[in-house]
Image (tube, rainbow, N blue to C red; front, side, top):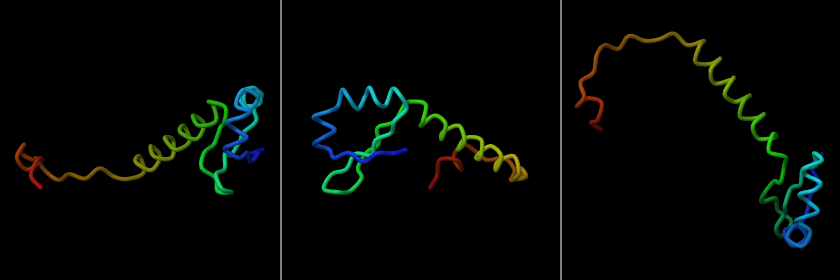
Length: 79
């Protein structure tokens, strides 16, 4: 569960927040009531990255390859 914490409180209590994050807690840091950052265990982001990578590769595999012929080096680098 994500817990909101103000930037001021996060600054004051950073060591405690890190201890909680090690236990699996997630904090949403707010500034003037608006979310600006997330403090989460390191594995949290890699799970999303792995899912995104899997979705991308699945999408690429579903598309047929196109034969567009050969390009010259100049054609590759001209705008």
